[in-house]
Image (cartoon, rainbow, N blue to C red):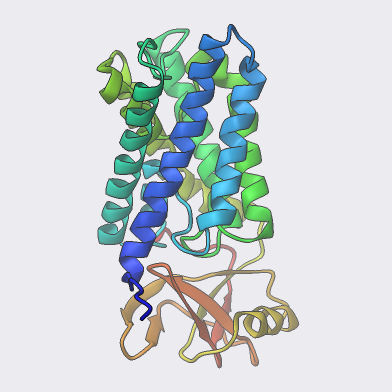
Amino acid sequence: MKHCVNLSPALKRCCAEALGTFALVFAGTGAIIINGVAGGAVFHAGIALTFGLIVMAMIYTFGDISGAHLNPAVTLGFVGARRMRLGAGATYIMSQIVGSIAASGVLRLLFQNDSSLGTTLPAGSAMQSFTLELILTALLMLVVLNVSPGAKEKGITAGIAIGGVIALEAMFAGPISGVSMNPARSLAPALIAWKFSLLWIYLIAPIAGALLAVPLGIIYHLAVADSYRIRGVGKLLEDECLESLRKAGIQRAIIFVAETNMEGRKFWLRNGWEDISGAVAMSTCDDRTASFKSAAAVRRPFPPLPF
């Protein structure tokens, strides 16, 4: 007799976030530790690439399950952009912290003589590193918001774009601030190594930067993108949705969900104005994708702030 374990979708997403964050902290801070143990054999560029490549790999591995946030700041950015509910975001953050602490715990067992375990420390002043972390995380979150459908980092280009930005920022700013951009990545080694000096920089600045990216994204749509808002009810395959949007001349669809009834598979979207006949739209609510036909699309310069 075959036995199988059926996990709920929410639990699957939490497990994916925990495993993905474990891999990120294990590989990234592990590269820092091994670089010290091996006398600089990994080099700074190797450490930066390790962080970028592991994030890229985890996006392709877990992107379709949880969205592969791997970062409490990114999760809060999605919550701030109204692409994710606060309750779901809280479970993601708890899972990320558990995964990161587990990774630092394993590294402590493997490298018992290392006292820092890859903790993040500034080379310059605290304010200099705080500003760097805030700006770098805002840029990262801006990329994440623009390459991710809904609250999920997935797709052919998402892993390359997000992993590339992380590697790039770690490459040039790492020697100054350490380029954490991730509260879980900094909290776990600090907790296991019991070194909390200036930890506040790496807890507050990434969250502030991620939330700053939300209005920056709206300014981007105001200044650059051809933006639309869409409403409607119905179901259609994702490819058909995108094809219909293209036929309607829609370059970019910005969608906010007002309320949902997941059991009835009915969704209501808010704030639609001008109809475009034949337009079809797709939306993501709480990590579940639903499609909409007979939708109303809005040709408007930019959407108002989602909060």
